[in-house]
Length: 56
Length: 551
Ligand code: HEM
Ligand code: HEM
Image (tube, rainbow over all chains, first blue to last red; front, top):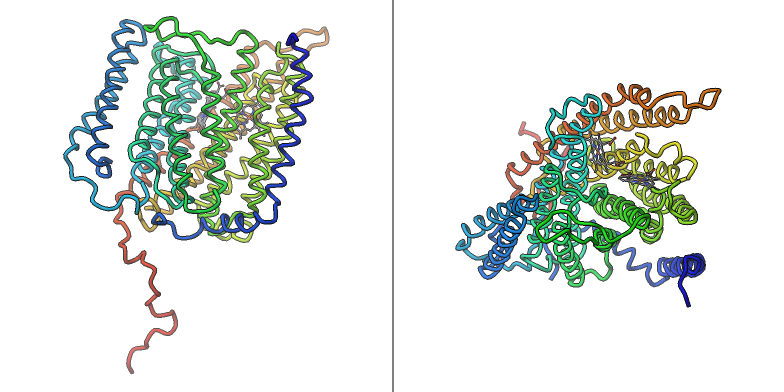
């Protein structure tokens, strides 16, 4: 098959769109996954703790 | 600097510097009278000075304490100093360039001081010198604190920092002698570009290895932004700079990209340099230092994740808005336009997240100029991204393109967002790093804040006015369909605005110099003793119940 300008256009207009939508859904699932709630809560608050020495 | 390295690490660094010195000699020998020869001499001097420094302290006592028990702060300190030095240089160049536009005689009839050479010296000085060093320094700080572990290398942080500054130095010194690739924000030539690839890959590996050693289960979101900055800048830099030098002894090279593809690759690079150099990394700063300074966690952690992925994926496709009405296929222009408008959503999510974090702490914003720096930066971030999405719409762009409106948009972002968030972060970081109780003078932080804000507003308003006037003058027709104004007419109309801009820039530069003085004096202040810091119950008597004098 010869790859022409039109092939590339068709590809980016279809698969480009699908992969971005799939990706967006994936990110949304990760963000709202119930068991991630605790990790996010911890991450958000732990930067405010004392930070003058590395943990061992 | 050397004190924390073991003797074998000191020897390694000497070996690296000797290799670099030899590379400098080779460049000088191959380049001969070509500009490449001059650049070789610069490499030689740079590595020679560092080598002398390393050798002079090679027999100093080895580090005695357990290094893993402490964070590695020395490279961060040097990075901050270098960042401020570049800030003064780059902004001085900005003021000079601005003054040249008002009074062209300020080029003094020399070749090196012409507008075309000074302008890239300004942009490289501020973006890569000031911004880049600040990003490297803060990323080293944030990754260690949020991972609760020391940097995963002793020598590599120095290699990254000093290697990066060699790149900046080669770039800027090259412009003055006429070297350029003539690609905006990627002006440095092939040998400097190759060097930056080595430095940047080291940076990436160092960052990933440090994250891999983290003691926290989750990687804090600021690190995601820093990682995006490092990874994407590597990609952009390599693809845009694929070029073939005329010969090994010649500074000039030719890009491998032909015609309109070259234009597209350049602005894919250029726009993502804005997105990942001037935005993602600085958002990393914002997500760490703003909550830290305000003493409140970020408003919504989930929102920060969603906007992270939004920004990374939308920005990638927006570059073609720099090429509206060109030979670029129409659908590619539409693609860039659409993604640019969509970008407003994650951008405002970030700006809103920052401002909502401060909601309930407005009294702190009022009293603390450091926090105010970051608050105003978030506002300007929201403003410039709104403006950007608007300018990306093709008919709007037909008015704004080629005019000072673009320059106004750039500096709303660069001064209002990039520079202000950096100063806010540095004023938070410097006392913590040098273990001082606070900055030397809160009043000077206040002075800096008002100089910077006034300078930004004057600059941006002057450029909005002149840009729109320019755009309108160029498209005004007379009744018989001829252009109403000549180009020179529009140039004369710009004169007052160019003077105003140079004045605004001068205020901004003065603020930066005040900041340098304040940081310097903070470093010279006496450190807080360990006792003040120790986590002990407060033994001072509570106010009001002080023992009353015996009757
Ligand atoms: C003291 C403050 C500053 C002054 C007086 C200043 C002045 C200028 C001037 C006169 C130009 C050339 C405009 C033209 O060609 O018409 C320019 C371009 C530019 N400056 Fe600045 N600048 C300042 C600070 C900064 C900072 C802090 C940054 C980045 C962090 C920055 C980034 C840029 C960029 C990216 C351009 C190129 C814009 C374009 O091509 O559209 N500037 N600046
Ligand atoms: C949603 C975000 C943004 C969008 C959609 C956007 C869009 C645009 C557009 C349409 C242009 C004009 C292109 C032209 O006519 O040539 C432009 C120029 C520019 N913008 Fe933005 N912008 C955004 C955010 C920012 C931010 C935060 C900065 C930070 C400093 C920034 C820096 C620049 C620079 C340096 C240029 C000049 C490029 C040149 O040299 O021509 N932009 N942007």
